[in-house]
Image 1 (tube, rainbow, N blue to C red):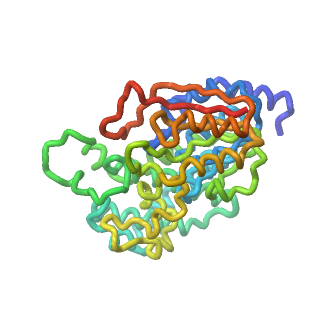
Image 2 (image 1 turned 135 degrees about the vertical axis):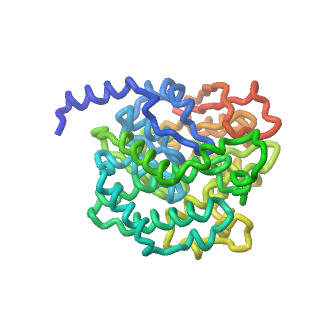
Image 3 (image 1 turned 45 degrees about the vertical axis):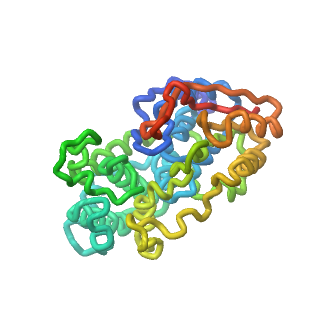
Length: 373
């Protein structure tokens, strides 16, 4: 157990953050590249407990953990909450060589469900890759060398590596289209990296297991990972709440308001044993049924949704991250924030996401932080 003095020293040391050691990510809307800027504008705020309400890739939660805060990561997608378990809640469990060997034995055995191999033929991955995915999933489900939280964290780290491997082998790093042909077509290419796509799942999985191990550290402060809609969270008693909600473009319907459309395959991996019941078999890319159900961020009521969100956390310091040119506008969001918070101000930085929309004005595109103190 650390003394209070030692704990204060540890937290002070954490403010000297090496951002190069942070998790890599191919997640749409990730704040990974602007974490130093986020740190600069949050490090002097007074808070010990923090809720990252739309946790996503976990990059911002990981920043707060490095700052020595008690972090609650939340995301309504199960696969994301598993990432939160692996690198936010988990303080000391790592993945050992024998754990990897046990998984390899499952893959070699061929004694497992072939659901992905049968169901997703020709959609996202090659036949041998689908077979490997079935094997690794059954290996994770049947991990039994540990108990309790240790087992939970071991499994979450395995899934972390699996999700990252799946993303890196996908065009656009997404599952929004049935587009395996982008990999397999024998054509001259001006997009993507065929060399990257064709490297084996095994190689990427082992690479990301090593990455996961390096990300695990004991912050000396309890952290948690939740799997709920932000609107269903009962506890609102946090010193600071960071909100990075889905972005709705002013001009057009935008898939980034519904991450399940983009990442349903990863959500299926996280729900492997009941995946078949979740699939809409009438859809070309076998996405989930009722994929728009539960999406609060719809064009017709998005302003009311943001007000509900800000009102819910009005007793906490709020840091709301949004993009310029969105719906609602930054001015509208500031106006809503002022209804519930006395001290409201903004900070912004030029920022364009990797998958920018056609016609995006790069010079005018900015990431904006709205503070409500």
